Image (cartoon, rainbow, N blue to C red; front, top):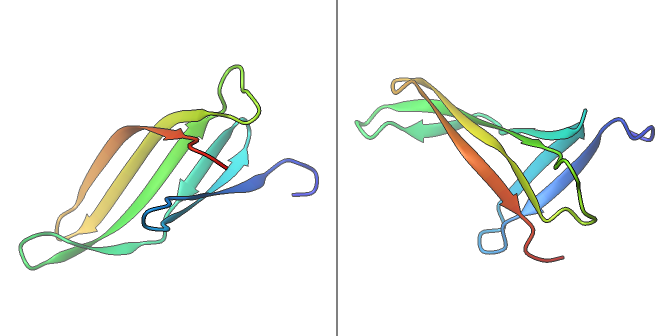
Length: 94
């Protein structure tokens, strides 16, 4: 927003060109993927949604070199489960 309350950050994985879009608001970033079909390994399928939260470092540098947080994968359907991981996003270049 023009008021600076929220902004978007785009992160691209160079090898695959995978795109992660994160929204900054209230001292942190959040991201939620679109629902995606997931194979359950038994011929059945489920739907997964990935959410991530990353906190603003206590003493942020300019540019910020790393963000720490968590990533949660929620799968519904035939193989319902939740997986939560600690995650770090690290700056590797411009």
